[in-house]
Length: 417
Ligand code: AMP
Ligand code: ZN
Ligand code: ZN
Image 1: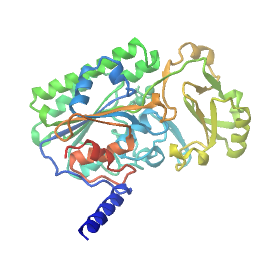
Image 2: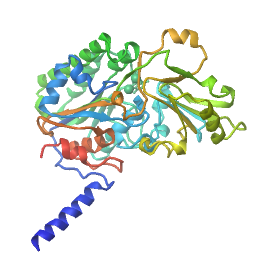
Image 3: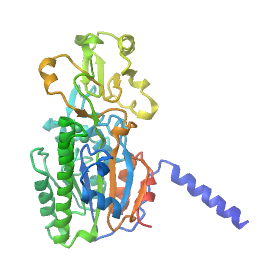
């Protein structure tokens, strides 16, 4: 009888944990702890073993470490940074790529367009963690993060910094530390910090180059500087660090390129993205999307996979948003789709590394580690998808997450009991 009752309870609990409800906050709100979310853009999961990164390795040993974190499709910077802080996939949070066309606004969103970063209408399909935090009385500060420069659902982070890609990593760390010098009552309890030097090196020189090794080492040194700065302020023991990347990096080059112009009439389409995946939409009054997809498919080389938006493979979760192009051109690892416009000169400086391919490919895997008083010590686990990070951040902060697509598996894996 007692056994049956226990079994019933266990079954009920298992049912609860596997549903899509927000994970409940698993700990009381720790008033004196700090949470810093650090992103090292383009830090492939295996750089941790491959390169000289002693600080990151020590943090992974002392805290929790996923062998590999799987990003969302497309494995690009803006969609995945927004997934990390919302727990929503790109089709749900609306930042479907670094650049995309919005048919309702009849305008293009662009990662490097100041307007796109300053206008909430692009971003408010999702609720980033700093907004969840501010709404629940937790002060937050973003030293760079896609989406942090605008009001979302009427709220902003208390402190934020307009993106400046020229600012050196050390200066970013010092800027964040200066925010922490505020009196305790005004100090942020949740912060983001972002480095892009590893991504730049990966693109320019390739993932397995001495230059990328040096960039990884420099990012590691910046994190050591952060730890020393926290220690000097008496904050080190009270700080929870979650260190992630948005995606990995794969070799590519100008000899592994397929051209748009060899597949379709470029005057009849809007080309919305190129690179490891492409997206096109027929211009009004030309052809239907189905006819366009069929004609591309008839000419496609084996490295190119052509899908109508609604035919995208289920595991990509990339159908349910009108910002996704009508016809997707998904390339195999290492291959790119490009336009011939300006190609002779672009060829000479074409990237040696890139990302955007199928997130399940080993090379697209990202970094996840966490260390601090909230986390288990010395615990390594297997792959985890990045949609679960938001619930973990909320649990560490002791706040209730907004509705999202993650569950509590990372909370259970990473938080100290
Ligand atoms: P990609 O490799 O094309 O996916 O994008 C990486 C680039 O995004 C980095 O090199 C940064 O320069 C840029 N980036 C990252 N965060 C921001 C931001 N908040 N605002 C504007 N650009 C950003
Ligand atoms: Zn990136
Ligand atoms: Zn990149």
